[in-house]
Length: 301
Ligand SMILES: CC(=O)O[C@H](CC(=O)[O-])C[N+](C)(C)C
Image 1 (cartoon, protein in one colour):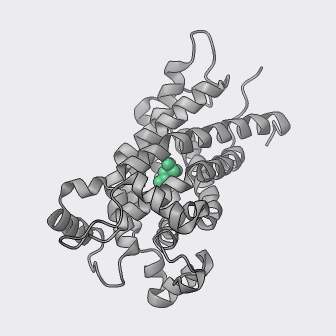
Image 2: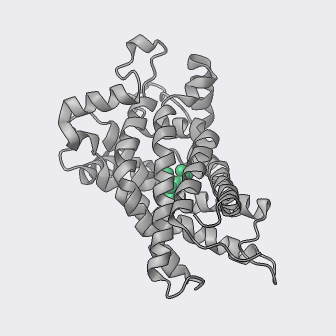
């Protein structure tokens, strides 16, 4: 079969489908991650709110039901599909900017640079999307009427009222610190694993479900190995009361190191890694299947 032409529209659509798959597969453990990262420090002699991942999972399900784990999912579903769409589009553009001809195979460093560009592209939506998601995820009142934010739109309106566009975009620097190198690692590791796992004599574009699931899952692990410390800074900054960290991410960093120690930068490690593999395996499978379908249904797109 002839190779299909790379296309920005197809990357965008297939990336969006990948994003929806990521949220459906990964949101419960994302809720646990944000709750662990943002729980208040235990007072002397008092037990912590959650002792770890499984305690947080059990307490959430007991108190709020299974769908408590899906709290705040409306925001990521509507936000993540465009984020992933832009991310895969940005990666495609980053690759094409460096290619001398359409079929040139890029080096791993070139792929890393294309991934970093994708990380910059996504921050425009990622920063406010993550701010709203984190604020909704940390609300633990069982009764809907007692919650400060009734949903993503209400949350966006309230934070805008409190501090304007600066408040909506709080955490942008932390988001860049997280996503620029992490997205580089994400796409480079995916391409690397696809290349090394493709049997001799076969083409990388001949999709294998198991290879795609494995390479996608591992890309998620590589992404988060780089992203966890800036992610903790981001979650703290985005959920802190107005004015608590006047110098942004620098203040959060100093505060965490002084008050809680360097290991606190790895809070949420277990749920992040438990989520990373299935969520990103689902993402890349959704992306590749959708791309294959588009190449079949609309080869000229
Ligand atoms: C923070 C985030 O969305 O990471 C994505 C992977 C995941 O586990 O959701 C990767 N990427 C930022 C490249 C879209």
